[in-house]
Image (cartoon, rainbow, N blue to C red; front, side):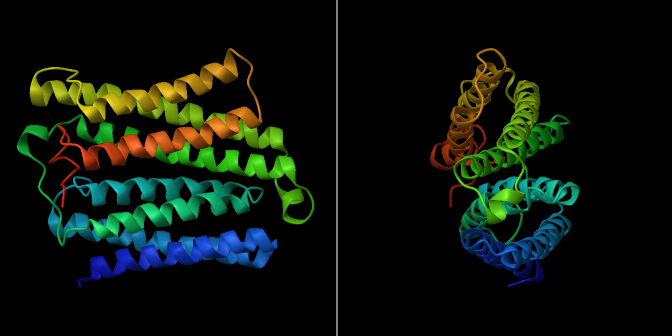
Length: 275
């Protein structure tokens, strides 16, 4: 096992410890455990970052071609956004109770699919649109993941009070912040779809091919478009939108990783290799 692999599994382990500390710290309302969860998450993120960087350097190819690499990059962006939010405010410190368990499970799954070295991108898929497509996809996932976590905190805050719950923002503030992250994710998903279409035209000569990944990406984008419509036009707020955001992120994860992992698609060879 090389240094890059050791760092990867260190990141998985540290995220697991962090998830444990967050969950039990929140249940027991122990601020020190929640603080330990954040500190461990920072260490995990450092190992995660170093692992991706070393894989990129050692393989000399972009580290997001296989399913494992795509999962590693998506969770990396989710953690980067999560830690940036933590650095900007202490009011949502318990947010990790929702973020870290998901990151731990997804990165652990990535580990089970992990190849010893990076895979070469097929020449037909090499394009200047690639980076914009990947940036839109990964930041879009990170944004809606944080929105779902904020929605989870909203549901807990709405029904409980005292102790750690009193230090959370008001439900209306959590609801508004989740909406902003959904809006950001919707924009980034739009960027992903548009640049993906331009990329597909270069690679296959058509903008849209009804590939399962394309279809499910569009479905995910529309799911979040409906969220925005319900809030802006229909005036939805609070609990209904919170549950919607939690369900929507499941749809997104299935469309982004579940569908391409289980079905032969155009994206095989870009980020999907059945192993």
